[in-house]
Amino acid sequence: FGFHTIDNEPYWTEDHYYHFTLKQIEEHIEAPTAEIHQLSLQAVEQVINSDELMAKFQIPEAMWSLVRGSWQRRDPSLYSRLDFAYDPQAKRLTHYVMKPIFSREGANISIHKDGKVVEEVDGPYGEEGYEEDYVVQQYTPLPKIGDSHVLIGSWLVNDTFDQYFN
Image (cartoon, rainbow, N blue to C red; front, side):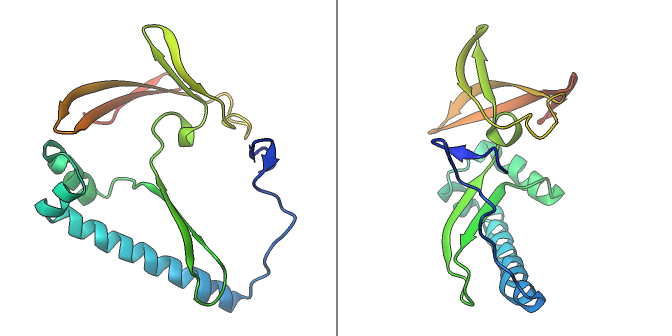
């Protein structure tokens, strides 16, 4: 991960490391991680099964059947990262949830409108040796529903077209 930096300072180095026993890994890392994952899935299940909670989470009613269908099909889920301080109590420091919107994990974003670049963000994509692979996405905002916007995307991955909502 040597190419990852923030403000020219590396945020990942291999200068320090933990040495865990198998018991510590199984009991203090894997077991709590599995438990938190299951609790998260239970919470999502409650939201999915409740019109009241779907509304509370501001999921547009027009999208409820799509969200529920996605859940029932077990479509790929959002990325989630939990940061813990390591001690037997494993206190959670922060929780990040992210769905990459454009390009691989949100890196190397280039948004074009009317043939002009309106936003561009450099990132590490391609430095892993996959520079031959590329993803092109196009989006079209649909009419606003309440305070929410519906977004349907289409992707061109290595010259192969795919559309999320068929």
